[in-house]
Length: 169
Length: 122
Image (cartoon, rainbow over all chains, first blue to last red; front, side):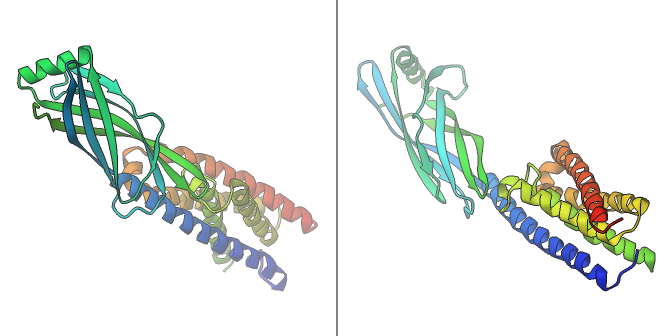
């Protein structure tokens, strides 16, 4: 093995490949780190905004799910898949709800209104809870967050949980 | 001196091969600017460069092994460093990519070195 003028071309090619692959890798790693930072930083909070009995056998609950992403660098959209409403001790199930396939583009703070109409046997269970002064309820759902990456998409299912108290109206 | 040249070539080529292999790993491919085929081509080019700088089958094979060794370390670091917390808890997540990447580097190195030796008339 020896280095002379004829060896300059392969050495040059090797250095060129090293620089190109190094720059491409650094770029990809930066995007990857930003993606992980965004994923780890996502926070959900659920707040009850409205509770009213709209007929003798129906009640409507409205919440705002607030999605917070500190310093978002990777474009992402969110789809709230489905959620359950239960008593806080999880003994009473008050129904399964969904918003349908609605994708919402995420900003640093995004508020998503959701609504559930509680009727029939679920309404009766809710009334029993209120009569027993068990007003703390659990909102437990899941959200699919879709990240737009340089070469494709990455989707993650993230649990969304919130506890709220009903004011008997 | 010959050993130092050998070491320098193995280090530079190994780092380039490891970086190219990392670009086509399942962890980083979606975040890369270039498709997997381009990353494979870069790895083959490393093999071609190394193949033009070595002489003989034994030297070529030894160089391919040295580059693969350095490439595997580079690939491991490239995948481990951005995900230290996750990778420390579940190292198997990146070890499969490192294993396949290392195998890819070795095969592509052999192909590159053989192509280079054929073109150089050996």
